[in-house]
Image 1 (tube, rainbow, N blue to C red):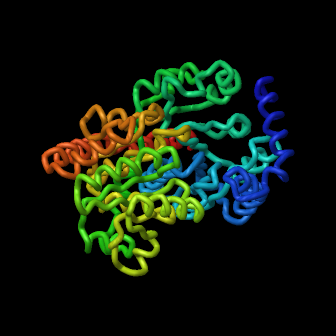
Image 2 (cartoon, one colour):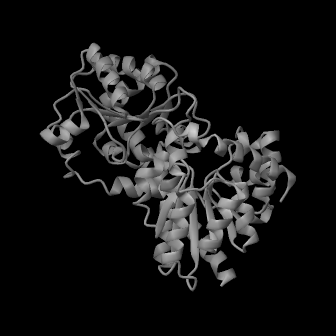
Length: 433
C-alpha cells in the first residue's frame, strides 16, 4: 500500500470510530452511518448463499441516486448482452436507498467503510470480475484490494470538470494511486478524458463512450403512463404548467417570486414543485409561502387520492416520480444552481421536450451548458430573468416549439452511451475469461 493511502485509511478509520455519535438523528450523515453498520455482513452472507463462482460478477458502485440511474442504464444494457452475469450494486448516500431494490442487481446495499478489513472481507466473498465505479467515486482501499485480487477496475459515465476538487493538489496526492489502477475510464466527453490523465490514468485507457445518464433519462420519461394515478389528474385538467424539480431553499427564494410574476402576466398558470428533500417540515413551510402569495396548494398525495389537480401549486411530497411529472409540463426549472449542492439533472426535462431554466452555478453539469448553447435552456440569475423566460415559453408557441425541438434533438443525438459502455465491459470480460 502507498504511504498516502495509509494516511487516507487512518482518516477514514477515525471517522468510523466516531460513527456511534454520528449515527444519531435523521440527517443524511446519520442514516448513512447506520446503513454501513451491517454492510459487510449483508454482502458476505449473500455471497455465501448465492455467489456462483462459475459465473463472472460485475460489482457496480454509485455515490448517490443520480449516479445510480447512470449505473442502471449500463447494468440493463449489460444484462441484455450477458444475461448469465451476476451483478452487485452498492451506494454511498442514503438518497439511493429507495432505488437500490429497483436496480436489477442480484444483491444491493451500502458500500462498507473503505478500510482494509471490511473491503477485503467483501472482495474475498464476492470475488468480483469487474468493479465499475460510477461518474466520480473511486474508493482507494477498495480499488487496491480488488486489484490485488485480480479484478478489473473501471470508471463508467466518468466526468472530470475543469474545476473539480479531484484536480486540486491535495486530492491528486491522495487519489492518484487509486486512479492509476483503473483498467479503463469510460469518459462522457473528450475534455473529461484528457483530464483523467492528470490523476494518473494511462491515456490509452480513457475511451469516450458518452453519458449513460441520457439513456437513463430518456427511458424514464418514455415509461411515464398518462393513466398513472399521479399523472391522470393533470392530463384531465390541462393548463400551462411549470415543473420545478429538485429545488432547495436558495432556489425557492428566486423561483417563488418569479412564478408570482408569471402568474400575474398569464392566467391559469400551474406550478408543480418537487423539493429535493421533501421532508414534511419543508413541504409545510413551502405550502405556507405559496399560500401567502395567494396560490391554492395541494400535496401530490392529495391530488392522487382525490383524482383532481385543481390547485394552482402542487407540492411533490415524495421521491421517485419527478421524471414522469416532467411529462405534464410545458417548461421546467431545475434546482441546485443557486446554492452549493450543484445543479441537478437537466436531462429528464429535456427528454420530455421541455425548455429548462436553472441558476448560474451549473458548472458541474456539462449537459446544462450544452442545452443552453443549443437554445433549449437558459441561465436565470434573478427572479426577473426567470420570470421572463417562463413567460416567453408559456405564452409563445413559436418560442416553446423551437426550444422543445432543440431539447429533443439533444437527447436523441446523445443516445447509445449505455450500450457503448456495456460493450467496453464485455470486452474486458472477454479478456479475462
